View (cartoon, rainbow, N blue to C red):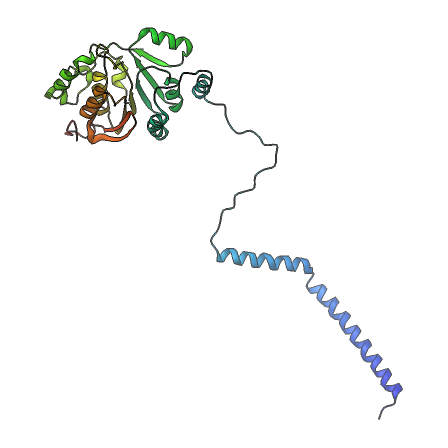
Length: 298
């Protein structure tokens, strides 16, 4: 049996050897693996994150909004819109069409603009139509020359032309019967049509342009001696059918009146009717040139 002194010395030697062994291991590890624990943890997290990304579909992340101040990226308001805002903000006169009626054509213009937009009538809503067709061409046909001069003095940017009508509302029944005759059921250029309803006195470019949208809100038609819209509705239908390709959206206002009601159904055709809201009707008329042999009405 060993003495207590020998046992104590042996224990000290053993502890000393363990201390040197631990130091040697630490030196050896730092030489072969110089990456710190923080770096190792970071790489481990990155590896784990990458594995998760590969396991899941890639998702685009919207960058957060930049801090103020921001660099302006918008452009100036278009002149047509600016003029419309100023005009309607400084006048008590409002367009004759209601909000619901205007919304029908506004939805079409939203899809088609910029486009070629022909409007029968020059009125308090003309700036609005021009603004809704920003970038397109909006042309107005007006029966009252003095009214054109008055509007042009205030808003010279509007493109309008004076038109003379040789019909009267009191002739409506007779003209409806004429419109059912063979010459009026043929799709031809209005300038060369043998139909009495076809208007031949517009500026030549009115017949040459492919119109995308047409609004019939003139001429005057609320008394028997007024020109009435018989010729305007019929001619708008011919212009739409004579388009080279595609479809033309035609709107007729005041369909609560007899002439507008009968002539829009008869010559723009109930088969082409898409919507009625209040006093306005929306027709969608396809090109008859692109597909020969179409009947006048479907």
